Length: 81
Image 1 (cartoon, rainbow, N blue to C red):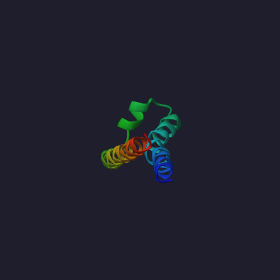
Image 2: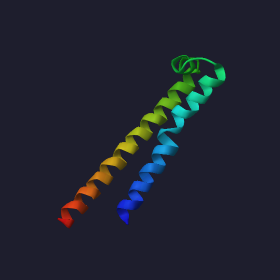
Image 3: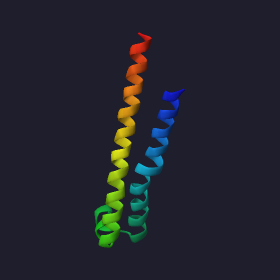
Image 4: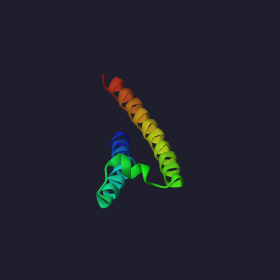
């Protein structure tokens, strides 16, 4: 059960925290009618700094979640065998 909850948490975090920022930026560039890079470059410096800081933290937390789930999965597989 712990493994299933871990996988569900990882999927939820992926969708809500990791994939949401690129989706919002894509909506922003389609609204402006410019390319992805131009839309990001047109943002104010504070927005770029804040968004990239929080996004990097989210990527770090996501990597920790993946490592933890892999560790639990390996421990479970070794116990079964």
